[in-house]
Length: 272
Image 1 (cartoon, rainbow, N blue to C red):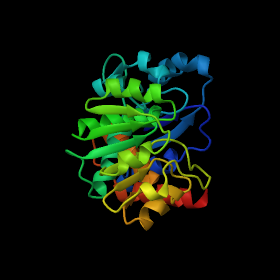
Image 2: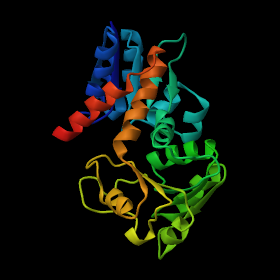
Image 3: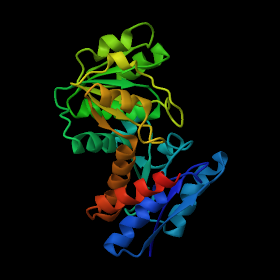
């Protein structure tokens, strides 16, 4: 039996186990997905232990995405982003590290028929999710405007991402950036379990595709405002789904049963 899992602290809230277990059941795979919650100072021992125990693959979440970078053979994208969220133990030698957040965001957008090549994209937030989304959009051929509360952080990230520019959030900056933008991604936690939004409703328009990385609630205030403006909306569960799909396919080499994984994920969200 293959054992996969999630490495984080805390992980009790994770929606990954039911999503991956649904995939194993759908395809009849002899596999299980479990959670591991090591102390921060034990992360190196945790990865060594996983390898010794024959674990096939691990997802990685807060606070370990950067910590594991130096303990695996990270691929080029994960190295650029500066974070690993998926570890593959199936090869010889050191386990390989990947970042499926970037590809997950792109697949979520493309699943909603959003064109990314030559698009003008605005990413709000320059933290972990913002970094992954910004690199993903740039690699897909978009010009990326990064807006962040701490402007210097936005400039630093823009200096690493091709075809990107950094901005603060003061005054009417977002409204100016969004006026002729094609894509907007909220990569902050604003709106998580609250009725807040990082973007003024009047800045939204029908030519936008708006994705919110927040998935609790599924319909955030930002997405409600975007829908009222006539924009295409993409809720945060799609990004969560597709990063999991990418990890599943990387580990197993099989095409993921996306519908079954999506049904399990949304079913869990409806109960949380």
